[in-house]
Image 1: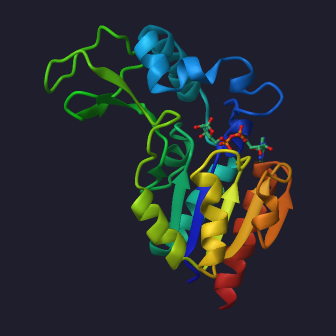
Image 2: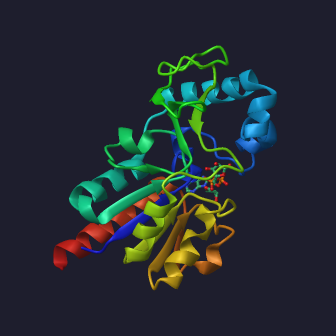
Length: 234
Ligand code: APR
């Protein structure tokens, strides 16, 4: 089986009703990311940041996985040891579609973190700056989200998967935010075939060997069906 590493971005959850960031009415056109997605913004006004993530947590719980999430879960269940999903998304739609071991490099909305003792626990629907850490009792609690200026999670593991893959596929990401935006170039430098599945060419489209454009719910199930058919013939 071909070893496939898949990177997903907000575009795969767009048709589930969760906003993207940089599209016409994206989240960063409505909120100042410096205020709600940086450690400095959180230090300045923690309850504004909690309100932002509480709203996204509520939206996420009422959203449903779409056929693109489901197609990736089907691919992964057909070849679990050869399909790795890395997501920039903080929603849990991959997991709710049946995917496992999803690497959330930017954290996840369902997680809470104590900046004091590094304890993690399931986030309540509404977090506030009054929350105390269930482990150490301190008030240094925050959403378990990687903010701008912070190091994404699992980078060593991700680069290991990237360089050992046969195919790297980016789905629904604009290629604007590093280090994720650099994964295609890293894969290519390691001799890995690269494919972009996106509504439109991303900022790093030129790095990919192949690309297909269209809504994720159309092009992802189509691509997965082709991969599964090819595996059957092999
Ligand atoms: N199907 C496929 N692709 C889509 C769809 C769709 N229905 N709708 C939008 N897209 C594409 C857009 O064309 C765009 O290229 O998804 C991409 C979304 O880009 P962004 O909004 O920049 O989201 P993303 O790439 O995930 O952002 C990366 O930036 O703000 C940070 O931490 C945040 O994880 C996020 C990171």
